[in-house]
Image (cartoon, rainbow over all chains, first blue to last red; front, side, top):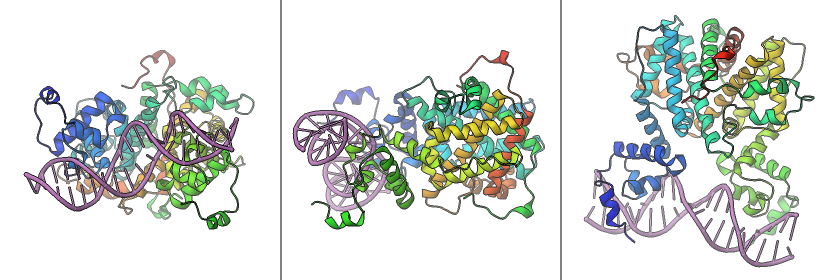
Length: 233
Length: 233
DNA sequence: ACCTGAACACCGTTCAAGT
DNA sequence: ACCTGAACACCGTTCAAGT
């Protein structure tokens, strides 16, 4: 049961296999057929080979995902402009989030494995430069970038399974269910905040970046002398 | 090839199947054998049945994970005390993070599916109450809780694949790789911040909560009139 | 009603054998 | 060197058939 020649004619010609071709095809599948369709086997079929062949160019699924993210990050506008640093910072963070929002599986990737290509480096560099413009000293800015990127990434990543899940109405907040079931007697604060807990969207994201920046401006890093216990647990 | 009677004697007696027994067994596997070992089939074996039987009590893997998290959250000390609200808030957030830190798979769950049981509700209620004590008005507090919980959860979740991954030395920061490869010429800010980007640990987490709280105290929610575009993308 | 063996419909990854 | 069919070692979930 060989592949019919028709499909050969539909897809112009069998491209030579390469890392870039694989990443490109993977991104195409992701945006056209969704995250579930992106499997090594499925990807191989799209490239007219067997799954095993992919492993010549890509170590494993995780690395493939990381490369896809790197590729996508290339389209980010790091926008040096005349605008004040703070506005540029929020804008950059919002557009980074939107980018991940469109491909939430890659947001997960960004959260769990470190992207490390040049495009990601440029993003970090740009963020550090903006915080430096805001006269936040290096050490604080370093931790700040992590904080800002985490907010962006986690927000987009949360969106992932939300989307796939059955109830698309409960899409905005991380607290929807807890609220619905809360009784005003046992959980008065939840009951009172019910409406507010779920409101938001783009505005909430932008607000949260303002919170982070304001907090960053007013919270110095702890003194060096106190640095001892480095583990959380 | 039936199970040998020896194993029957080792595990005291076949407990009756129930939701609680399943969740309990799942948590045992998780802490004794790690996240990879926790599969429906493996869990069924531990309970002396077939995987299909689990589906009588649990809808799917996701729901199982959520129940496990809920169970774990029961051990959280919500600690009403004489201490000022701000200290109690940070303490609660840190202990919530530590709890997830020990079981990072469940941190992922907390990030991607909404926990919704009573223990989670109690946590949200406690956080809202603390912010109310800090005289943060309801709407802002609602968004604030989301922000605080997300920092805690994402930090623990990031820890997940870090742990499983090959290089346990690079465990602290989300930026380690980007730093290593950055040239001082093209990325001067990264090069300058190199050391600082990776330092941290428990101290960094606590600092980030301070940032969040300070930011929260100084950043009102946007005016109602401006609420229009609710989507990010 | 509760339980289960067996099957369905997949996975990622490896490897010996080919070109 | 590059490529691949086939196999390995699994998955989660469903369902018909049993008790």
